[in-house]
Length: 189
Image (cartoon, rainbow, N blue to C red; front, side, top):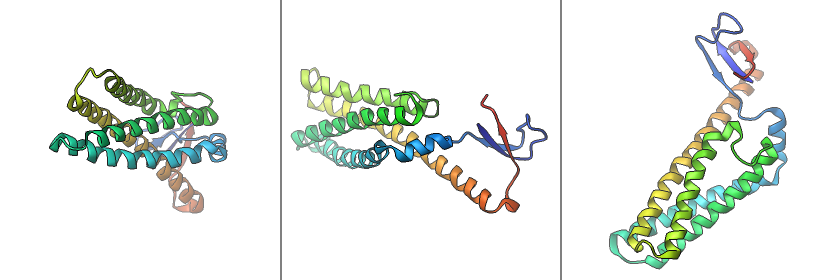
């Protein structure tokens, strides 16, 4: 259901209005709040980001000085294992909240890019195990995987921030209906 506010001339006209689709239906929000996987994701996401930052420093240190190859390699492997953990638990969370393991419409593009992130991190592990690339090549591949990870994390943060702003706006509208714009409800297109 889209919610529009602004100066639409009819229920079917959204010209001059601002529309958004809520991230969660009330039922999905309830399932999200009740899921243990919500807490798991809330722990794993910042932990993975912290490991990413540490690993990034170690990789750049190795590329810049040639020192610390083992530490950089271990940090990339740990970051990759955390990525696997967050992907598996995230798929379980998505199933509980949206009824499908991946590609729920509201998170389609985030999940789509996540597949590339996962593929790049997996490619790193394959290259590490097979020795197809030297240590420098492995580190460069890790940086490409990390760039994709940053893009994907940005997608999720942008989506969640937009959802929080929309929820705050709805709460504000509910608290002060005299100060709000008209709200039209429309079926999905």
